[in-house]
Length: 495
Ligand code: C2E
Ligand code: CA
Ligand code: CA
Image 1 (cartoon, rainbow, N blue to C red):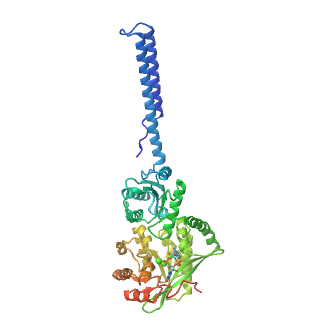
Image 2 (image 1 turned 30 degrees about the vertical axis):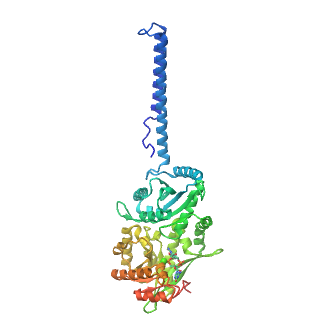
């Protein structure tokens, strides 16, 4: 690590040293000249005295230039530290990291020894920061950086290149294990909750990887490519990672298009809601409908929510879109039988906004929906972001008589202890378990365990993505209460 102190030899000090040395030499010169011209001192000839004086002058000059260059070195260290080191974490800053990537790229192009550039980004860091406050946000970044350092090999270089984004340069020969094994282990370690001063904070990560020199040697291009891989990983799920592939460039262009078009789409009224029935497994009766958003673009046709919801979450458009969904679903409730509820998906970003409860109250008031006819689907990831706040919001919703289903259950951070602190009425078993039930006995075991767990907690279970009779039979045998899936009805418009 570079010098981190302020330069002791500041510009004034250096000027003073040079001035003092210069004056000293001058006085010495004068003194010598006077003596040299006059009588001999201590029997020394005038030439010898001249030589001594010259040596003394040279010494003084050497001293002053040494001091000057030491000062320059210190200043360089200081400037480096001020401009190249990230103050919060002590890691390299973005521009220093670009320099290191460039150096590594040159070295790897010469030697052929691969070096990986790994982009690690905390999902929705901006929203986390807004909800926990900047000082705890800083605390989170510091702990994250320290844990990253602890869990990477000595020879890895780490830089903080964005608010919640880190770049790692890892020479292939620094790890004894294959890079994919190492990354998976790292992600698991980094996703363990962080103890902040007031609460435990969970984070999700996305990771993108490029290999040098294969994927390029230009540092900016490499960073762009590792970020493309990261975006790709983010789109495919929590805690995921991806290695850069050339087709990812097109995906990025599409993403940018979606981002720029969402606003217009909202104003133009492109969005609509489709509804998918949920049935009581024992009686076969429809008990509710899940509202699923659809984007009908005038030129491009239907765009899947999987494509645009994550982008809306990142850009903040989820605020107006989520509010629109809630209002529309609650007012659509008039069009479905009175003994059925509407289930509305609530994005984690929306769930954690300060005025979420006020919004729910407002919508209920405006639409006149009875609370028993509204169910909110909230993912476990949303609840884990800030457990205390989540517990408070869930308690309020429960007091209002609104049911909450824990969506995509089993796919998030698998710490079940939080279930005890939270008020909710249903666990929604993720489609990934249901679809594997027939082939893979461990998925069946997971489903039975979730049903058992929900019974112990006194809540109901719903299984999503049921496509075959066989799955329905297995779910019935496992004791699941409610089912939803193409077998019983695809999402569609209400009328
Ligand atoms: P989700 O909440 O897990 O919703 C279930 C998804 O599975 C829906 O996809 C649904 O159409 C699909 N699905 C239902 N039954 C089956 C089946 O039997 N087989 C298969 N293969 N799929 C089935 P969709 O509508 O594309 O929505 C995808 C995701 O987008 C949703 O996942 C949800 O996370 C999000 N989403 C949808 N609408 C909204 C919304 O209004 N607000 C928010 N925040 N997110 C939404
Ligand atoms: Ca859902
Ligand atoms: Ca799901």
